[in-house]
Length: 126
Image 1 (cartoon, rainbow, N blue to C red):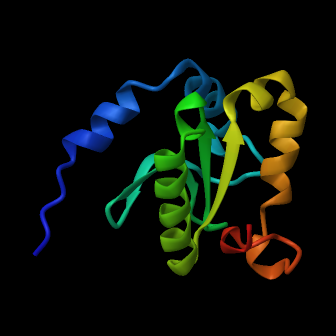
Image 2: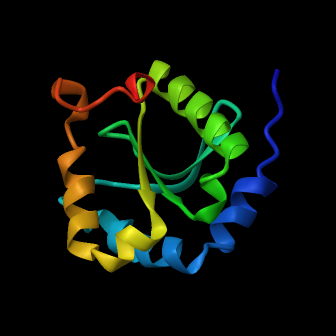
């Protein structure tokens, strides 16, 4: 039986970055088209920043730390694992999201129903 250290997600939930806190004010309490989101939700060995179970959609806000080669490779492997588990990962660059808040919300909404939309790109194709 695998023991999960629940202190990690709890710590992450309590210590949101300012950008994560802004996004959470929009996603919490089913404010975005009635969809329920969870913060710091674990799947396997991975922690998802925000997760909508009904849509099987994860949202990750990526800062500058995600532009490096090593982090990019890790993110790609993680995204493939999650896609194999039936979860789409929507990666949003922090700066773009807050320079364009309407575009951010539209991008999230456009990824609802992704499993039935063949136009949504598989991250392994990139």
